[in-house]
Amino acid sequence: MFPYLKLSKEEVEARIAATTPDDVAAALAKDRPGFFDLLALISPAAAGFLPRMRERAAEARRRYYGRTVSVYAPLYIGNTCVNSCRYCDFRIQHQGTARKDLSPDEIRAEAEAVRATGVDSLLVVAGENPRVNSPEHLAEVGRLLKPMFSYLALEVAPQSEETYRLLFEAGFEGLTCFQETYDQERYKYFHPAGPKSDYDWRLRTQWRAGRAGFRTLGVAFLLGLCPWRPEAASLAAHAIWLQRECWRSKVQFAFPRFCPTEGGFQPEHPVSDEDLELMMLAFRIVFPTCCMTVSTREAPAFRDRIVQTAADNMSAGSRVTPGGYAVLADHDVAQFTLTDKRPPAEVYAAIRAGGQEVVFKNWDNRI
Amino acid sequence: MKPLAIGNRRFTNRFFLGTGKFASSEQLRATLAASQTELVTTALSRVHEADAAADDILSAIDRSKVEVMLNTSGARTAAEAVRIAKIGKAAGFSWIKLEIHPDARYLLPDPVETLAAVEECAKMGLVVLPYINADPVLAKRCEEAGAAAVMPLAAPIGSNRGLRTRDMLEIIVEQARVPVVVDAGIGLPSHAAEAIELGADAVLANTAVAAAGDPPAMAEAFRLAVRAAEIAVQAGPAAERRTAAASSPMDDFSILSE
Image (cartoon, rainbow over all chains, first blue to last red; front, top):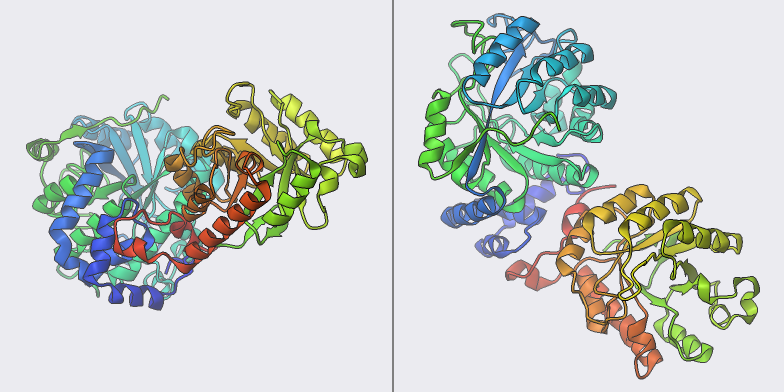
């Protein structure tokens, strides 16, 4: 569990299991639902309330985000990695992955290809490689991309507060770091070696970035590694803790779900479409002002529906391969399998068809 | 509800009292006894701190049981408030309530001057409690500047209008990492109870008690109301879980360790 949560996993599970339909109805009726309401809304008892949860979440979403969906794209600048995450095809032991770290010129070419799709908000992603992840290199990437995009976010290995200050100066304003699992025992199992095996260092990543000035702090666990309900409770506690510690930053939720691939990692605790939707609705209801993104791992129909009720942000036309937009024509070195393969224009059209506006620019790096 | 501690002092009574506007020191003495308060505030501009025994306010207070927090009432700038704090510190008062109101009609606090004064007074090692408008961002800024607690107003001082700033108080309570003492505008014991029920840590009243027909009786009523609300919060109101009533905004930080 999230270590600063005073409740044990057993207490959380017992509370969830004891939830009655009355508790769910009460949580849905509240003006300001809190942590314990979230436990009710992710309980099995909440499954019968799905239509009401959709309405309640959509209402909260509309109140804070209006009829808009902001879009971004990830840019993978490298996939060499010194970690051993058992579920990831970027892990050091994995032979099947072609490795590629982009040069500054290649990064620029990729960025131009993304920019040409209209996307103005970029998430820079890399595997954990001390060379690629060096503060100087990341700062250089920031300075290179800053003039091209109105918003830059970062999803790379955890850095020190001092490095985050440097990177914030260089142009990065958002940070995402998935904890993968909040269960410390399972975390040890899934991350047996490499710098990522340090659970606590990773857990406080957003806190360090928040102190360094980052505006958006992304949190998530990997859906499929462990039973999702205690993980969701931990995720909520993590968000509440960040709100307490870093009140100037906003928290962004993501719900990355394993889609089992042939011969790839088979998640022990797969999360169904119904449970994923329930969880996203519950987080939207309890955290109405927090950002929420929906992954390109999800199918178009699911994504188009969830941006009506819960998510306010989605990627469009994602390539999860270093060089995937322009540098490489066709190379299979992706981190995970994309389900929504629609080109950006089709994603925008679907958002508009749902009665919402596509927002490309939500911030300006020159500010 | 967490036990109340401000600075390094623990409080068992969440009702604090202002000492202005009383008819006599006898009446103040009787009111203090009825309130059983452990914290009073008094204006430096009103007391003769050099000769406490002769002062009609200080002589009414048993300082072994009751903390005396000087306030800067009358100050219009941070510089004036800090001067008052320094005089108080030299006289042995380490608690200071910053009240900086350039506005002579409503006595509303100046946020810019107050924040600057919090920083200065905290650097001097004082236990600083700023009186502020119910502004959640200002409350956080004061906290970061070293305030030991924040004192947002419920309504204009002396107005007895109750929790007019309720929505903002809820946000302050939700976000604060230091105690929240609702100050000013509390007119009735029920207002004080409401403040505790919404999650405030303590309540301070003055006019509502001093200007009541029977101040000691009103002080007792406040003490009982605050205590009743405290017990209710600890008991966990059933209605919250079964109806559409607002949840206790205290809940969420209380699930976390420090």
